Image (cartoon, rainbow, N blue to C red; front, side):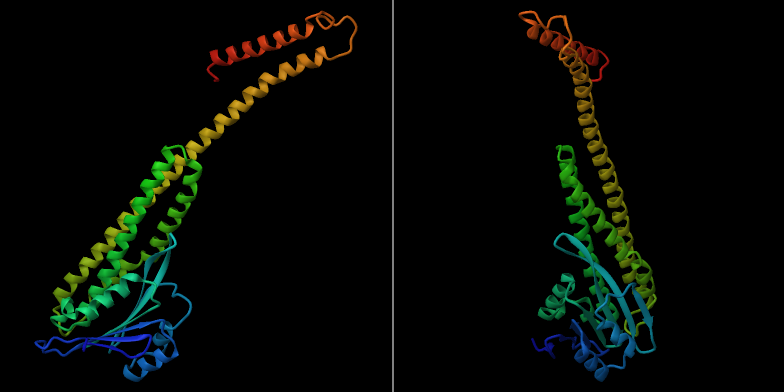
Length: 321
């Protein structure tokens, strides 16, 4: 692959060069787990601000997305959700975009990013940006892949919500509690990660490009804005559904607990008078009726059984059981 070059273990360069393109070639520099050596490489080859370079090597995740428009390049920090061991976490990707180049820096925790770069280096001609060599168009393709991965994540949420529904109505409410809590956590995390996407994408739609018409630029990025809105609507629906599932599950658990407490209360009420009868006939009093008779024990037992049956009949008539 003559268009592909590995500078180091962490730096890869893909040259997207269409011979018919009069605007010059486009270089995509992909950096994974940036450190001091990667910062020095970028300082040597590009005039990026040191503060921006340090942010791509920071061990702590940026707390918010960022867009910086400079005279020579645009710096962008975005977060996308990723799934690991059933839990959603934020994956950060930083971009430097300028004429003829795009630098992406990430920690390798966004599979869609890695897959797209691998696909691009196998067949760079398949990229839309190949036709005009525009870094803005390449950025649009990358963000489109990352957003599409979010759709897959929400599809997995929908499948899990359906499984939770089956658990709830098959009588496994306790088993459903943990799944509900995990789903709620994942949906909240996705919402936190993506809440500012549409604002950043709107700003990107106003980018200036020497290779793409401004109207066309707004058109291609407007699609990403619409996708971001659609994702947010799906997240709202999933949030509402999981809240309803949680309320339903709690209602069924409470109903089951009430039935248990009701059963225990009925048994307690039935045993109380029977305990009183055994206490009375257990007294060592003179001339205690039935006690001295040959079949006194069985008569007392019969009285207790009759009392229990009468109480059950009374509870049944009152529809308490």
